[in-house]
Length: 192
Image 1 (tube, helix red, strand yellow):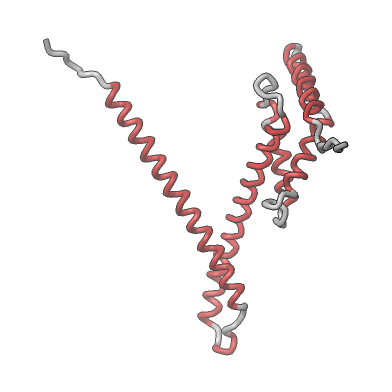
Image 2: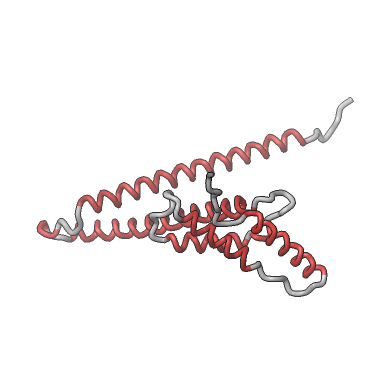
C-alpha cells in the first residue's frame, strides 16, 4: 500500500485558522475593541512556507537567504488582511505567491547594491591603475575583474531594457489618453 504524502503545512487547518481569525477581527472592529493578533499557527505556517521556498534551487545559494525569508514573512503580514476566504480557499498558494515575489524583490535590491559596490570599485581601481607603476599593475586578478565586468554589463543591459519598457508603456499610455480625449471631445458649435 502506498504511503500518504504528509505536507509540511496542513492547508485545511491553515484555512480554518484564518477564517476563525477573520471572524474575531470583524467582531473586534464592530465593538471597537483591540484587534486580535494573528494566530501562532498561521504565523508558523507562513514561516514554514518561507523557509521551504527558500530551499528551492532558484533561491538556495544566495548569501542573503535570511533576508529573503524575513522579507517574505513581512510581506505576508503586511498583506494578510487582503486574503479573502470567500474568493479562495487555498491560503497556501496565496502566501506562497507573496513570498515568491518578495524573494524576487530582495534579489533585485541586492543586485542593485552589488552593482553600486562594483561600480565604485571599478572607478577606484581605474584611479589606482592610472597612478600605479608598471610593477604594481596586477593588483587584482584579471578573472575577478572580468567577472565584475560581466556582472555589470548584464545588470546595465537589464536596466536599459526595463527603462525602455517603462518608456514604451508611458508613451503608450499617453497615446491612449490622447486618443481617448479625441473621442470624447465634442464640437463647440453645431451647424444646421
